[in-house]
Amino acid sequence: MTNERIARGYFQEAEGRLRHLDALLADKRFATVVREAQEVVELLLKAALRFVGIEPARTHDVSRILRQNASRFPDWFSAEIDELGRISTELAEDRGPSFYGDEARGLPPDELFHEEDAVTALERARFVYRSCLRLLEG
Image (tube, rainbow, N blue to C red; front, top):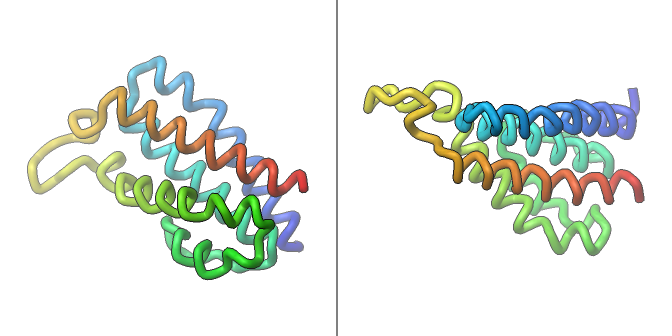
């Protein structure tokens, strides 16, 4: 399978997941929105990396590899890499707590994440989606 086919597969998977986030938000499942938004962003950015021929790292945060390979992307995408990387890092940091909570403090995920967190995560996922859609559409 080619990198482009894999990239498009990742993109389609992310696109499908992104469509479900509004329903999760409406159901007030804020921690789940944050976690799913992280997965959407991870898939989208790994799609972008594969699209330009870069094997993505086996990590949830691909900001470092994005920044290291900025020259492989079109100029407009490279100009967004700092923001894309920041989004990747911040959502990756929330991945574990949005799934498991804070075990040391005895707090479940739904006590750690609130509506504002979910809305922000969803907005960030949509930003990454628009950037990656433009990249893949060429």
